[in-house]
Image: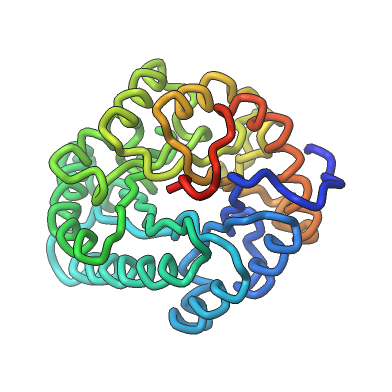
Length: 303
């Protein structure tokens, strides 16, 4: 793991996704990120819902932090019936929560609701049908997202998660699903951990930029051996094999100037003091990602 930073201010485009300090409640996360010199945070629904959406919005406003994303919705791969209706309704609530939080965050906050598609339904082997269920859910939710001013950010996950978490495995698949909709309403999450292996990743990043569909750029690293729980296999940028130069350069070449989130599921980090993780992440980002960013853009034009 990278060494903690001694700097009092993180890079202005760096955002810490709350999952990186999973055991922090909302107040602890906001405090640790702000004290670490960050300007932005990506929030998760469970800690927000624990204190209520209006109170969470007030606390976010008091923190002075921007909202970079809100995680997460999706899990659409359910046959029509009560369970699917419950999933759709939960996503409706997530859209409303995203809009409320983005309105409360510091200037430059973005109403981006990250979606994880869901895996193959229990007892099924119909991968194509599961992806069709995702498309149907997007068609149902897109008008509500548009009315709320929220972008639905489809996140392709590494293929090892296709059976249980996300039948959308490549950036191309995410962009194809987004294609019928306005780019401001349905976009894609570009997460290095999930797409670094894809031989089509660079042209698909260029496509995403040309279509205006990069809703968020998330970075963390891949290294082996994978742990028994492969969900916890993420690492700090620079601690694995991902080529941040090519991926970050490709994202920058599209004109994307928004926040860049570090989102890491890693038991060692989760067990560490929050302040140490915040500092370590800022140092890793500075070393592995910052050298490959385009010329700095004034925060007044970061969207």
